[in-house]
Image 1 (cartoon, one colour):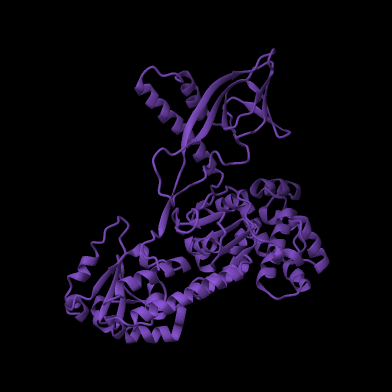
Image 2: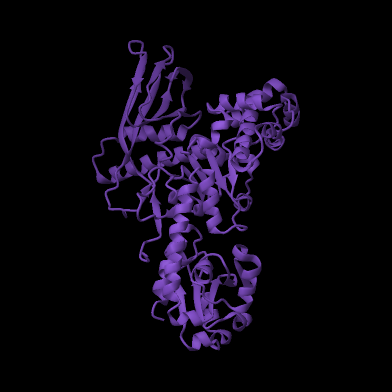
Length: 550
């Protein structure tokens, strides 16, 4: 068992470089300017009027407009002969990291250069002004000007990223949002466009236009996605007949469902469970680690950080994207759609914790809800394996792990700790806890079969995997403290662990037999608290190393 594997790895954002900047003028002799570059291109319209042709679509251009073109895009600038077009063109590339990164590190996808769709910002005079200044000083004669250019370039990038973020700000038309929410919650019923328009307070024809602006789909397309995705969820998670599923999602019979299903997915419902998933999103890092263990890199992880579990025997993720949990529901929906997600795996508890629900996200992809607190990590792995059609791989991993558990228990049961009562104490800035059957408690009490304090043992017997911890007062320490204490300290928001000193210097602490006999082990938070198959396996190895020979 390897107990020295670094468990967590960090993702790194890419570095940007300005490849070139040009000034482009349209004239009567040269009315059309062709653009085709292997890098991302930013166009800023400084003066005049014209048209932009991209992918057989035409967009009107005027002063102040800024356009971001994906790499390898074929585009044409067409000038207005009465008001000739003047534009600045900046080529943006990703720069290779010059410093050595850990072998487990992944470089995150650039939000600016990875976008496959053209972005047009209608009024950005500040970006245009910065582009003009960057062009005028493109050949600096002093180092100070060179540094100013670097700042200016990154200011332009910052302005672009901020403008991209504004796409997800709360809408100024809550009535439209109410109508969309109503559709998401009542899609299995008979709903007309006129009903939805009445909720929004607009005419039926205007409603369709607004709906497309809000969602990217027509009302009928959105309704179809909701119904078909719900049908997919039922195909994955229930034994209902196709007819029963059709009625549950709002279709009159299984034949109509099959027709809609095939129109949207290209496959029939009967073959859905045979199709391997390639682009799966997860809510929070533990479920991302389950996918990685099963050989599938998450396309998107919705998480509170950009850390991910490091599987030492596998390559680090190559293209996984992170969405922060403080993002709005609308932002998450847009980003998941852009990532072409086929399935979202999440726990209802986690969705609700961050102000989300399955109804909001179902139009993006079907959602498999894997309960977090009510199930243990082995059930998590089994259910996720079944959802992505990799059950055999999940069961093989669990079989191998159970053999490791038997070997580890045999070693530890020969040590002195086998006859001791072991307490798992957690000190947080806001209180004191004693762990039960989850996190490191699983390894100590279930894998290794060590003895828990009587009060904790009683709760484990009652609640099993659901028993996470008990909150206690420092005055209750003696009732829970065993012969040996394993202590984990959570830092506060500033990274300080000074709050633990109040516990360690208290009379309640100093009178404990484990303290007097010096049977205290301080455990690293990152190594002993994560609750997922890979972390549990590593904790098992660490526990053997900790207790062997005690």
